[in-house]
Each structure stands twice: as structure tokens, then as C-alpha cells.
Image 1 (cartoon, rainbow, N blue to C red):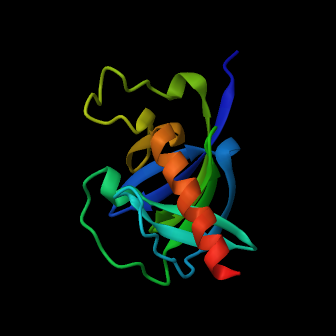
Image 2 (cartoon, rainbow, N blue to C red):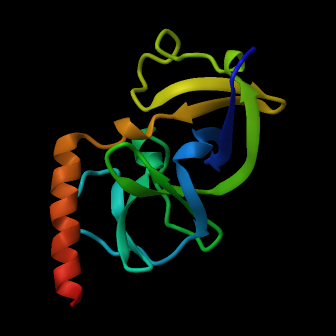
Length: 157
């Protein structure tokens, strides 16, 4: 018998992506983003979520999609990698799907140019890429980001 996985499907520039539900804490509407002095290109800044400062990952940048300004209709997916909690900036969150393990294809032989994708599956309206949160930030980037967030926190006091 196959194990089942729950995934959250979201949109970004007309493309469908997914994350395992187990890594998601919640989804919120877009809020004010505070810039950081030093951050990787794909970090848009940080948000203050009830006193907790989280880096905002701009997935568009990771996938070389066109840049755009944040809109009120956008969402942040609050997600936990094994190393850091983050907010992922997405256009919209669509649905939660339940799949059998054998419906998820590994991508190591399919998408060689993308280090951020760990699998894919098909829905009635197309292919969905599953993000690998642990690959969004390196250990060095996390260390620098943590220092910047601490600096930002002290400036707010």
C-alpha cells in the first residue's frame, strides 16, 4: 500500500508549484516588508509576524521569473525548512491535494537546471513542481541573514 502525501498548491506567474503540507505553518495575506542591508538576492526583506522576524523569499528570483512589486492580493506561505522559518512570497494559494507516493516523480533526471525542486506531479490543469525548502538558503546565507535580523531587531527597540 502506498503512503499518501498532502501538498499545498500555489501559483506564481501563472505556474503551479507545491510544498509538502507538513512544512507549512500557515498562509497570510501580504504585509509590509522591511528591507535588510545585506541579504541574498532572493531575499526581499523581512516581515514581523507577531514579534517574530522572518525572511521573505522571492521565489521569482530563484526561478528567473520577471520581477514585480508586491500586491495586496499576494500571500505569504509561512514555512519551516529544517534550518529556518521563512515567508514565501506567492501570488495565490490554491488547494491542498492528497497524492499517493507513486504519483510524485523525482526530478533529479528531469530538471537538472533546478536545484530548488525535489519532485513533480500532474494535476488536471498541468504539471506542478514541488519545492525543496532546504535548498532555498545555504548555511552561510542563513548565518548572515540571522545576524541581519538580529541587527534589525535591536534597531527596533
